[in-house]
Image 1 (cartoon, rainbow, N blue to C red):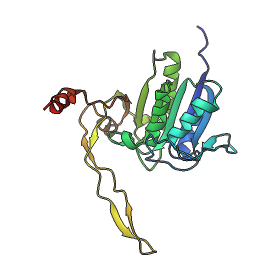
Image 2 (cartoon, rainbow, N blue to C red; image 1 turned 60 degrees about the horizontal axis):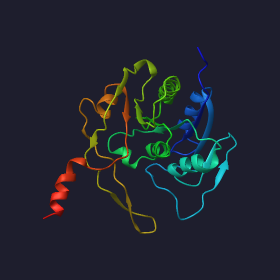
Image 3 (cartoon, helix red, strand yellow; image 1 turned 60 degrees about the vertical axis):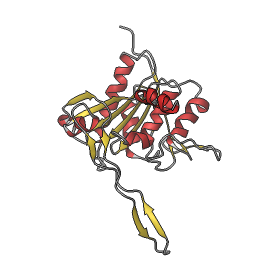
Image 4 (tube, one colour; image 1 turned 135 degrees about the horizontal axis):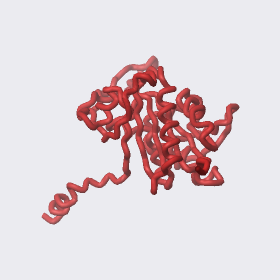
Length: 253
């Protein structure tokens, strides 16, 4: 049996290069290939797919060998794939995020956006999130990430793929399995929180995400709530195909 190929793996996140999640990810994948970490210099949660176009980006290297960029998660992957790396990576793995990225969260998520940028550039990509802000079991999510990369190495997809993986914040022994899911939906977000600053200025905090609305069987919310790892294949086409006919008719009136 021929030896498994050495993978070139690009790691990124939206929590910053100093986050425990990316450290756990790098440690888990370290012996599977050539690992390069390019992550934001600070927490850029909620940055979505934004690119920095109004100023130059700086690429620096920290003492632990990780590279960091004064930009967004998308900037990091775009810079790495299109300018920094001599060879295109075989995979982009983003995470491990502190907190879930399920349902509507994927629209805002910098973690998903980093993986999505790899996918848009033709690289198979995976976003991995730990579904709790407590962050007790990064080791569980890291183990899932490793198993995913090992599976990709054994049996790569024919074309680019974008997987959104959410892992319950549980010990490995309590994970009940893995389910392929669709995105659920949330209720609308809570209202903004209005406050007065010490300088007597009115400030606003974005409200909390809404509770799960569409969380039935088959959704990412349902899988995680029942102790399963959720794996959702994502696509980029936002066209509302079912409304094409209706809009065509409406414009003809």
